[in-house]
Length: 152
Image 1: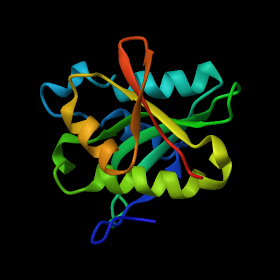
Image 2 (image 1 turned 30 degrees about the vertical axis):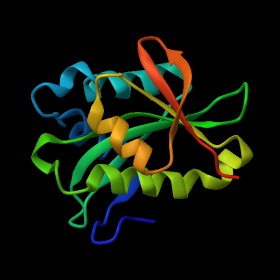
Image 3 (image 1 turned 90 degrees about the horizontal axis):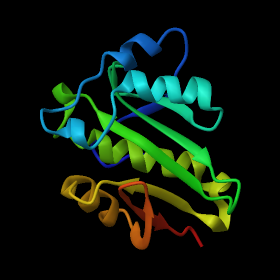
Image 4 (image 1 turned 135 degrees about the vertical axis):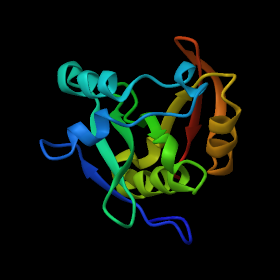
């Protein structure tokens, strides 16, 4: 599943791609909203919860990253660490990556749906997720606002 005109593929981060993911950078000012990719990779490797995915454009280049996990309490699928490299922003790849992830995990999410969290000042993330149907719930995760998308 992808956005019209935007081709992305999602692949598990592996020995062939982790270095490309670790080299991703975000635009100046975005560092306060997302952690460094190396941090996310370490979290995935050692926390035992998150599953890392590299985002590839139609040339096969790694242009972004995101991770997902299943909440053991309610079965919802959480998305986290969503980022697109600074050099590739503004082309709809982040949106396409989120849409592709929702499609890939739809059956796993089931009736519990999807959840994610973002910094309340991150208006770009808030707008993107709202346009995809995510609704803020009033929940807070650390200093971030939680939004959920129901699939049924």
